[in-house]
Each structure stands twice: as structure tokens, then as C-alpha cells.
Image (tube, rainbow, N blue to C red; front, side, top):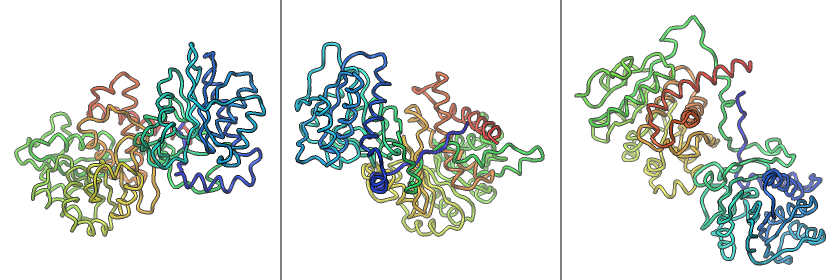
Length: 501
């Protein structure tokens, strides 16, 4: 079965859905959220005796925690609630939740409680959720540090407090959850930058709401079902010309391996032929690992191949700049990575020419390359990865992959996707070159640009995940190993898609 994509909404989208739903919500959303959180707490503490600690903030996230506490208390569980909220300053729903908690016999402490001798069965963060927009202040920063120091499961309600729900940035300090129960839909901050390290295992409870029926999601979490129509078994009556030609241009002296890795990835994913134009004129004209690759001069590859990928190991000298100019001037699908992106950052005169191309353009920058294209710094790119990818896509009228964990794929018309396959073992040399080859191979086989880049990014990480399950990596994982695994994962997708039909 190919999993369907999950909708992703920034905070303003979640707020818009809530505003539309609230007039029709019976029971109210806070009651639904607190009930769902209590059910999750029961699941997490099935074999863990002892009290549950719930830290509640002054707003509606704290209200969710208070409803959760009341539900657990009514179910006979021992609950300790730490809450400093001033009822006169609470939102109406949160104030009602506090009153209902007290009416049920619950008590609150305004100080962070000492852990019992046996420890807490579960600690729950219901401090701020998605509403936080500034650094966590005292005493809550200390509360978060204390919560993080507790042993055992740590549950965040909606979003770990201190984590920006839109960007994944840590706002001073953040709760480090083992599990996060998020409501209505995923938020981008749970999926990219620091979010995955702080959110732990993320589960979505929709609160009996279908968010897409109220508001079209601006983003999606990538799943193979997104590209199901393109996962078709091959016809018997075909030949190598059916599956297209890829041209990889790069491989300056000392960096020929980058271009060869891209070429090997393209070949293993099934295109008909791969031409590799090595900028190092002294390099051997055969790849002894993958002799099927046809090594040519860069100029010959630019002329011959139907799909071009420029950048792996290209260098940034005058010859490389000339090759980039030639590639931009072609009417062929073009993937730009690595040094091609560095050159593009150095050549603003090429920006309008690239944006004006009639053929598809795909850019695959890491944050440093993206910062040079945007004339900013890496920190600014990472501060809002979705926005940075969208800006690049609009500026160059291109599909953009902003790499990193939680890679962001952006389209020129403003849509975006976040991919969560892969692991830290992919932080090694050559991984980006492999991705370039995977994208180019699918384009050569006739895939439309958007599904091609979505499939390649998801496949890239899925291959590494398969290797990790088999005991290969994450430490010491190599790009060459990912190429081999990607072929197996891709063929498995095709089989499952065929079975679904």
C-alpha cells in the first residue's frame, strides 16, 4: 500500500480552520483535544504506574492540558497539574477548563513540583503550543528545562513549547518530546529544521475535522501516493531509446567522482543512456565501476543528451561559467546543483535568462547555496525554510528542493511539500550528486518535472532508511550504497502501485 500524503498547514491556516469550525463544533474543540490527549496518555502509561505531571500554560494550550487532566482524574488516574495562569487573564475557553478541573476536585500548583521517588509515569507539555512567537521567558524556560530532565515518556500537546510551529526554530528553549500529539493537521515546524529532533514521534488527531474540506492545504508531507500515476510497469515492446538520455556535466580535476556518482544514480534508476561530460580533460574516459556510462567532453554532452544536469564537481572557473551559460541557453530540461548553483549566485546577469527559459528548470540547493542565490546568509534561509524555497521558486520560475532534513520542495505557483525520509547518515559526501542523478533519470524517462522531483527526493531518503533497517548506517553510510538501495525501493513502489490497480 502506498501511503497518502498528509496536509500541512502553517499557524494562520490552522487558525482559519478553527474559526470556521468553532461555530459548529459540539463538543467544543478544546474538549475534543483534551479527550484525545487523555487517551494518548493512557496509551503511553499502560505499563507505567505512577502519577502524570501536566504543565499548563496561560492560554488555550494550557486549557487543552486542563481538560486532559480532568479526563484522567475522572478515569481514576493520579494527576499533578502545574499551572501559574491568572484566571482573569485567560482566554474564555481556557478559564472554563480551569474551573471545570477544580470543580472535578483537581488542584493546581504554581511551582514546578518535585518528582516522586518512583518518577512520573508521564510528563506533559501543555504550556504554549502553536501560539508562541517569541523566546520563552521565565519561569517557563526553567519549567521546560525541568520537564526535559524527567525520565520516561514526554508528551507535547500540539507542538513542543518553544518550537516555532511554522519554521521549526527553537525560540530560546524548547520542550524535547518523545511523542507529540498534534491537532487537526501537521504543521511545517514539526517536519523541518529542529522540529523532528524536538517533536519525537508525531501523531495527528484531526478532532473529527477534515481540514482540507474547510481550507485547501498550502503544503503536503510527501508520500509515494503522490506519484502513483507515474509508477507504471514497463511495456515489453521497448528499447533504450524509450527511456531517454541523461547528460551529467561536472567533474573538474579532483572532483570527477561527483559527476560519476550522479551518472551512476541516473543509470541505476532506469534511463536509457547516460553521458557524463567531465571537465577534467585528463580523466580516464571510462568508469570502471559503471562502464555503461559514456564519458564525453562537456560540450558534446550538452549537445547530445535530452536532459541535462549541471554542477556535480563542476568547479567555478571560467570554463565552468561558460558551460553554465550554454546549458541555460538550451531548450532542454535542466537540473542545477552544487557548483552550478554557486556560479549562478556569482552571476546575477544569468538570473533573468534562467527564469525566462521555456524548458523545465530544477534547482537543488543546500542552505548555503540557497543563501548565495538569495544574497543573504545561511541563518536567514534556515530561519524559514519554506519561505526561502518559495522565494527561489518564484524568482527563477523553477522547481526548487531546499535540502536538509525535512527537505522542502517548492513550485513557482506557491505550493510546497516537505519530505521526511532519510536520516543523519546522509550527511556525507556525494549524497547530493546522487539526488541530481535520480531527478535527471526520471525526467529523461518522461516524468513530468513536479512528480519527478518529488519522487527523487522521497526515494533518496527512503533508500537510506531501508539500508538503516538492514544495519547499514547511519554511521558510515556512503552515496554509492544509497544508489543501489534506491533501485530496489523504486522497483518495490512500482510493484505495489501495480497491485493497487
